[in-house]
Length: 67
Image (tube, rainbow, N blue to C red; front, side, top):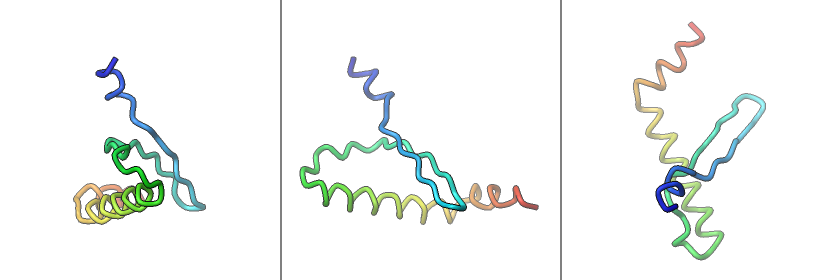
């Protein structure tokens, strides 16, 4: 059963007028007991992810869709 749990990540869909983003969380945030601290950690990780993505070739390829 533990192997199956590793395959099932919690997911969320974030949507604005311009973007729909589906996110699956691979990091286990359960060791952070305080809900507000857990949220801050997740938001920090999300911002880091976006900053990293901005620096990749994939981000340029993604925007070339509109060429």
